[in-house]
Length: 170
Image (tube, rainbow, N blue to C red; front, side, top):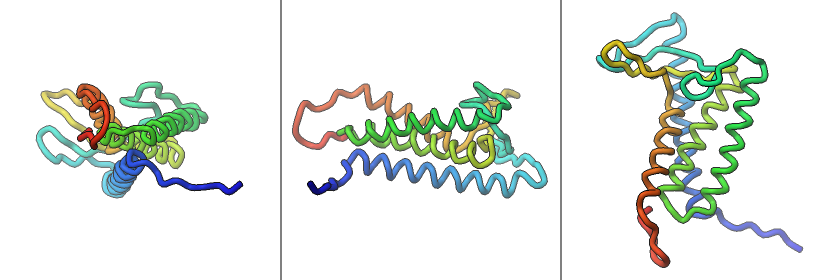
């Protein structure tokens, strides 16, 4: 019995492309941030509402579940990789381009943050949005991919799918 290989689905290809783009952009911007914001530690004012300042997050989004355990990065990384595996299967089965792109953005962002956790024990954050003395928790491109992917997934769920035939714009 010979094993046969079938080409990846369109959804999986799109998810892979979007995920790779988010991952590469995330790691590139984090490298630049580490090179230019770490030594010496500094804050760069980009706009009246935007600074670049280096931070390290040992928890999940916005510092939730933050801990100093040596096992923390491994547990959070394992959970993130499990989510990525589920998203890959979901993307492979999806006939919606919007869904596939959203799965890819979420997976690419999750992998970007996993790389940081496993490499340095914390996620590199550097984007600081603020207004009227209030600062949003510092974040990175991976977080933008995850948040944007979830938003796209929710928005794409608002439009009904075509019953059959033709290529849906979703």
